[in-house]
Length: 114
Length: 113
Image (cartoon, rainbow over all chains, first blue to last red; front, top):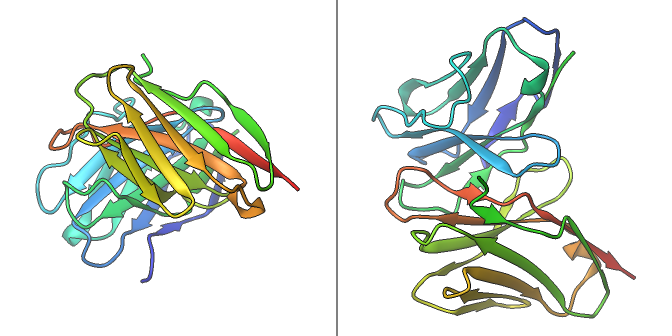
């Protein structure tokens, strides 16, 4: 596609439920990032994938968060047993390669945990 | 511990005037700096960047200044236009590092007609 695509654009869930957020990066981009933006905060780094290498999970806030990237393309961020503090906009970004910081962002998924 | 700080949550500027957005950082290892612009319900888009070997980079109406000794950078927009109204994020990185970009909290720029 022309840009980074994320789905769903909005997700409302109940506390304790699991959610899956999807990211479809720009074709050919080898680097993929997940960030989240909580209300009034900056963008918080969560996880990064580069090609087929093991992901950098250093930003994941707890073991309830996990992500995978299948075939070096589509990525899924999973949050298990959601908590109210998980409510945020989850942004996915891709770039042509690891050394290129000019990230292309999707429109994000607004997650609301009730 | 915030490594990239944007101390002004919002800024209001008259159309046609200069907008100056400020950003401070604490990590002396940062060697690449970027500004992103974000409209509501959209993802951030890359605006302009600067390497630590430079102190100024200009692209049309946008200029970024870097003062390494003060660990400070600023984004100048001149002249300001209504379409510039958005949230601007400052970001920094250590090139070749493993942590990606570190973002500030953003400054909401409002251009008054």
